[in-house]
Image (tube, rainbow, N blue to C red; front, side, top):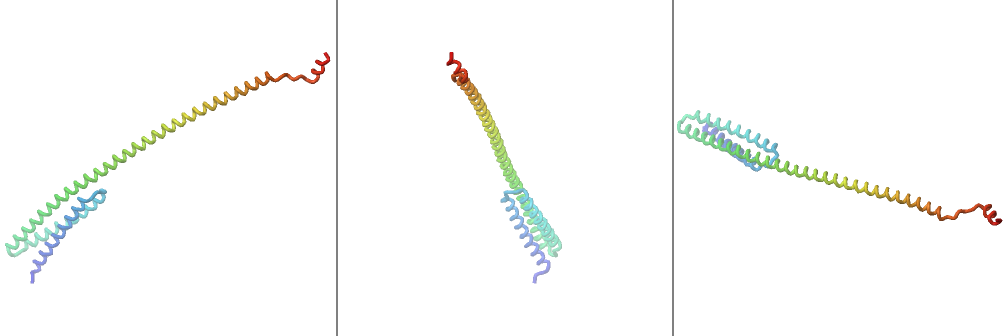
Length: 186
């Protein structure tokens, strides 16, 4: 039967490998993350937790190595600890690179959205300007129509007055019946 210390070392190694794989999976998730920034922050929080668990297990393995009775077993375990530490450092470097790449991608995406939003603002401004110009043109046109109608009304009034004057000139003067009678006597 295996010594309790050997079982503890095996469990430590298995958990180190498990945490290492979980960290790598999370780093890949960060590489694949397209935003928003809150999603990246959430992934980073999980990575930090896994690194903390990994670091704790590596320290536990190192302590177990130092407690080994046989020098050869001690050296083998210390070498494993060193390898795990190197792997953890490599993961941390990958994590930083993935973070940087993801943040740049998110920034570029946000920048593109802002620029596209600027285009929309420009389009809206252009639309407002064209609406103002159209409104102004319509107002001018209506004012022109109003002036023309006013002139037409004035011309109609003048024509009516002229007709009234002409009608008065062409209408024979009616004499009163007494005048007719007196004209016939003369």
